[in-house]
Image (tube, rainbow, N blue to C red; front, side, top):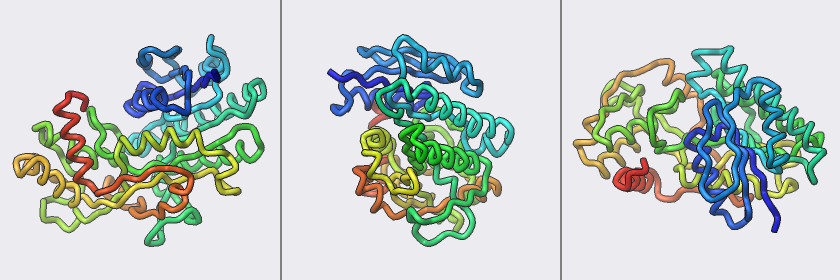
Length: 337
């Protein structure tokens, strides 16, 4: 039976844990085993072979070590690690170090060790719709030019160009997935500029106050701010699908795929929150407009053409915000959110 050896960086994060479980459950990846790395040691999944590594991935030697474990050279890499959007904006140098320099070192390692494998290493890089900015069409298509207006988007776009070039030269088999804003994220708020998009649902459903940085009241027109979103469940399905798309199915000039999503305004979220959690939950949302947050989020496009990613087998949510909020409520009740 063929063995799949998968390296996941950023594996200690929430998405990293969900991804390893999804890959184990995926019938297309039999006999899977993992090399899991992060700045804190990841937790190994049960009943599969795994190596867990605590490492600073901004230096060459720790990255080289990922390719020299007892499991040998990975055939697939999921490059998930990074400094989130507001963190990159507030600490520009750290953002460059983690979101650009570290990715370049990962690519160079995949290039160096790839010839020792049977085929170029598949390199799945998670990017973001933060690569967009400036004047945009009403609906973003694969032809829309990315011009970021924040440090996070700049770092992601820079690394995208590297992944494309390394793929063009045959050093790796890259696939770049630009993620929608994932809602609802469990756990504590992250340093992402978009963290409030989950926070205005997550905390109120747990009986905790949440601060919305868009607008100053429930009646503020600023709440019509739209975002491009997807559920965690659908996003993880698409992570798995990314490694299974044949390389020759991507567009010739780029390995970028904007993952499918749908448009939801802040008001759409709050209306779904009230339907699921009642007025008691809605009243826990407080408002204090943050111009920096609003500027960054407003620069991201809220509408995309899903035609291309759906043609590659990626998935999309159906039914808008309410089913997602109801699922999160069920996760809270089950003790898994």
